[in-house]
Image 1 (cartoon, rainbow, N blue to C red):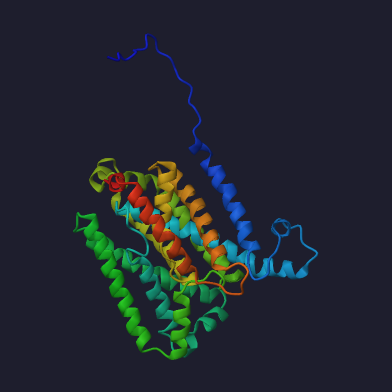
Image 2 (image 1 turned 90 degrees about the horizontal axis):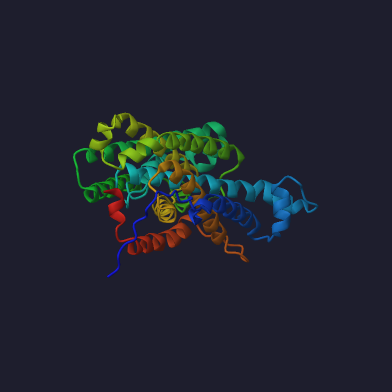
Length: 362
């Protein structure tokens, strides 16, 4: 029989550093490497050494490489970083707000709402409102797309939240979100049916998703909007921590639930709406990255999860964009296809591996 040893005097054990303490710096280094790799890969192969020199502002003797990186690949890589951060944090907020591990911008119909806003601009304004014509408007055209996509996202999210106030089952709430998204997509389909062929072609190309169509003026608007959404999300991190414990407990802790929901709604609408407006619907990033982050950091503290989610979302989007380039060829796959091919197996693997996934939100 083993007798437990009881310490006879109180001793203070030193706190041992764990491998998780080095995760954030490690992810930052990995994200920077993936950033350089994404710029180096393409129809024209450029050595990493030259890519690093040009990115750090040291220039290059090869003017063709300098032009390709500064005018084409650098804006696309920065767009990948912005998209990875925005969609990942948007999904993290949805999973905490609805206390549902399968909640995400696409699954709750928020992306479809943003698509409805974009369709209203591209298909509802007649033949003169093509995507090319909107881009020719410069900053004002960009803000119009962001405004309409964010309004569409907010409308769908508000509808799901209103219905969710009457429901107690998170699975049923998720089904409601899927149904609302289906209705939204049906409205867009009717709009497409009555549209001109040239408008329809442009809209269908937009639905494939792309990071390459964002130029400098768009990036300024997109980056500013996503940064605003991220700041609001980080400011709501304490509210997200408390909401994970349930609304009744949150009220007993003195949290103003209605105001917190409004901040989260605005942040999610800005993040999802602006990214969908410029890059098209991109699935699985919003649901897969928060699960990866929780598995790696084993924490429910959103002050840690939000920056960690940004870094992992950045790495994932840069890797997806590198794969979409089909290295060694002139072809480029739609980014939405690559994120789905990588994201879906990740979600299945995490759900199978972590059998008590639902308990983290109970």
